Amino acid sequence: MNPHKIILPDGYSLNPGDLDYSPLAEFGELTVYPRSTHQEMLIRAQDADILIGNKIILQEADFTVLPRLKYIGLQATGYNLIDVHAASRHGVTVTNVPAYSTDAVVQNTLAHLLNISFHLSQHSADIRNGRWTRSPDFSYWDYPLMELAGKTLGLIGFGNIAQGVARAALAFRMNVVACRSKPVKNNFLVLNNLPGGGEVQIPALSDADEICRMSDIISLHCPLNFQTKKLISRRRIQLMRPGAVLINTARGGLIDEQALADALNSGKLAGAGLDVLSSEPPTEDNPLLKAKNCFITPHLAWATRESRKRCLEVVVENVRAFLTGAPQNVVSPTP
Image 1 (cartoon, rainbow, N blue to C red):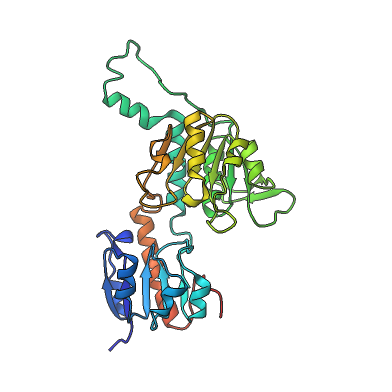
Image 2 (image 1 turned 90 degrees about the vertical axis):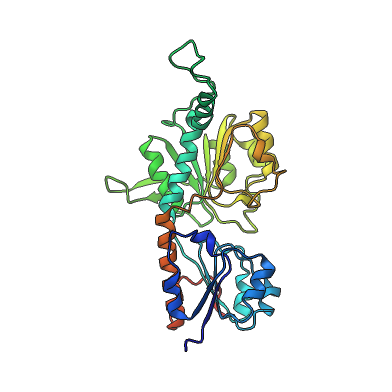
């Protein structure tokens, strides 16, 4: 009899029914719950030694009530909801799934930018309401249109997703600048794997302040942590160029949401494309829900079936690697 008990408290988020969790049953007794509150998760995982989830939250006190727990397999790249230091102190290994959704998030970032550049969703909605049929002209536009060629795209962060966005931006003949937390040699970041081969040098600016000052479009691609919380603050928004555009497909907590809403409503910024908010689902009083020219998608950039399938495959292999004594993709510190 396989001794391992495996609990998935939020199985629906990765697999609403179009994927197969059964490979995880190879490792033990598998129980999948579509959704669980935090308290339900703690009760359901009381005697589990393996916990697999997407947006589960585990802090120091939670580990004390899960005495058998030895492994947490995240169905995600970000692990800011888990106190990995507490996990390590309690003898729990935490793993994640890096880079499984890079192409999809790059695509979503560009989708937001392209939507804003031509106000596609607004024009389409107006046409459904009869705006074009009432028009005296064959063509019209009720919102400013923006050509991307020649515009400066500023990337905050320069990981896999940001680099993918940079490659796409270069195809639109945009200028690309970036900043990142790690030191940069010679004030340039190298971008390779271009469609035609070779590489290009991306100017590396000193910090987020410089990105805000110099960019027509700012796109966020950094993790959420103590240093980056509300990185896009009221002060930094004031540094941005009039009519700038902000894109965020990283984490909602990177932005001071009230400050962004104020900047959009005043016309300081031309638009924002957001796939993430600070609280998900958002509360009804979130100021961005009704802000002018703010286009929000429900944290779906990662969720193509192709991305989710890749994620699940790595989740399975992460469990296998842990159980064979050679864990991979570990994000918890070594005790």
